[in-house]
Length: 17
Image 1 (cartoon, helix red, strand yellow):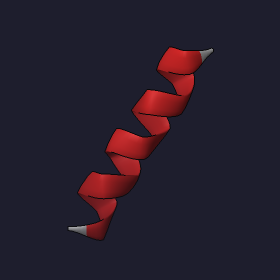
Image 2 (cartoon, one colour; image 1 turned 180 degrees about the horizontal axis):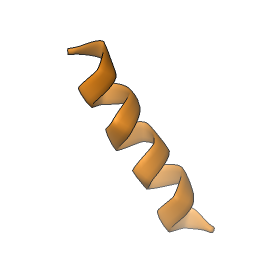
Image 3 (tube, rainbow, N blue to C red; image 1 turned 180 degrees about the vertical axis):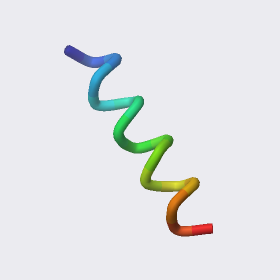
Protein backbone atom coordinates (compact mmCIF):
# COMPACT_ATOMS: atom_id res chain seq x y z
CA UNK A 1 0.00 0.00 0.00
CA UNK A 2 1.13 3.56 -0.63
CA UNK A 3 0.58 4.37 3.06
CA UNK A 4 2.94 1.55 4.02
CA UNK A 5 5.64 3.01 1.80
CA UNK A 6 5.08 6.55 3.05
CA UNK A 7 5.23 5.35 6.65
CA UNK A 8 8.49 3.57 5.93
CA UNK A 9 9.99 6.71 4.44
CA UNK A 10 8.86 8.85 7.38
CA UNK A 11 10.36 6.42 9.89
CA UNK A 12 13.56 6.27 7.88
CA UNK A 13 13.77 10.05 7.98
CA UNK A 14 13.33 10.08 11.75
CA UNK A 15 15.97 7.39 12.19
CA UNK A 16 18.43 9.32 10.04
CA UNK A 17 18.01 12.37 12.25
